[in-house]
Length: 305
Ligand code: ZN
Image 1 (cartoon, rainbow, N blue to C red):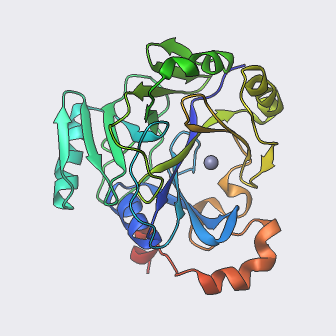
Image 2 (spheres, rainbow, N blue to C red):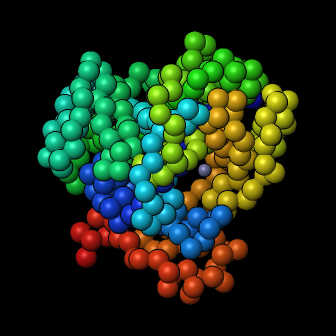
C-alpha cells in the first residue's frame, strides 16, 4: 500500500477574485471547481488544477474575505513546490512573473516567488518522470506550463518527531526529506528549521496538505494513521473525494483523500468551475449562499465572452 503523492494543497485567501486572477490568469492553472467551504458554506472554496482537474496538481483556496495576512511558522507548510519541464521554462516564468510585477529568485534549477498575499512558491525542473499535469492557457506554451506538485516545504523545530508516523504511512527518506511514492506519482515533504517568529494562520498561508489514496485503500490508511500514533478524523465525504484529517507530529495538518470520484461528478469536463457548484447536501442552501458570495469569474470565461 502506497500513497500516490500529493493529492491537493489547501491555502487561504482574503479575496477570491484576486486569487483567481493570479492563479488562473498569471500562473495559468485551470479553475476546475468553484464551490463553498463545506465546514463554513458562507465562503468560497476554489480549486485550481490542470486541464483534467487531476489530483497531483490541485491547489485549493478557502476564501475568508478581508482576512489579515498570515505567516508560516513552526508546524506549517511554507512553500508549494511545482514541477516545470526545463530551465527554459524557469526563464519563461521569471519574465512572465516580472511582467506581472512579481519578483522572483532564479537559482540553478529553481525559481522562487510569492503570490500577491505572500504565499511562497518554488518551481523546479522536473526529474521524477511522472506524467506532467498541465492546463491550457493562451499565453503559456505547454512546454512552459506548471506540471503539478513536486513537494511541500514545512517548518519544523523537531522533524525527527514526524519520522515514525511518516514511516508507518510508507514515506521514504530521512534527514527531513520524505517522499510518498505510489504506482503513478510521488510527492515530497521537506522540513526546514522554523523562523524566529510564531506562525499565524491567515491569508497567504497553507491550511493543509492532502496525500492521495486509491478509494479502495482509504479505510486501511485510516487504520495506519492510528497505528502510527496519529488521531485521524472519521472518514468525511467531501463529495468530490473522501477524506480523513490528522496533525502529524511536527504540527502540519495532513489529509488523506481518495483519487475520485473527482470534479466531473457534477459538471461536464469542458465547463468545470464556471458555475457555483454545491454538493447535494448543500444544494438547499443555494439561495442563501449565492446572496452572500461576490460572483467570481475565471479569465477563461471572460475571453469566451
Ligand atoms: Zn483538503
